[in-house]
Length: 164
Image (cartoon, rainbow, N blue to C red):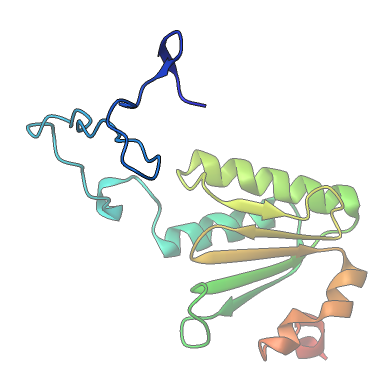
């Protein structure tokens, strides 16, 4: 419905009707923004205090080690995938352990300036995926890790099979 300007009339100009009942609309242009406003700043990763890929990897590996994650595997994806530069796979002993590792890792990433990391699977804690941009972290319970066997998919031998 058109906004009423006075009783019985609408904001359009109804006095200039053509033969088919069409109405002529007011074609005044909307006010434009001033042209002398500051130009948009271009995004540059150098301007941000984001950790480097190697720094991010070291932070994640150290945090996993501090939280006593088991069977930590680093998979280099630079020549295999455009999704990320590396993938880190680790296991926790139980649902609570996987959830605590994920929570501590998310806090460490946020404190390091990589707080835009996304997390999936945290409510169930069977398989938690943390996407930190160029580094993807998979946290599993041991049974779930054995079932999905990501190391085999990415052709990396699991740590226990390498030791035997």
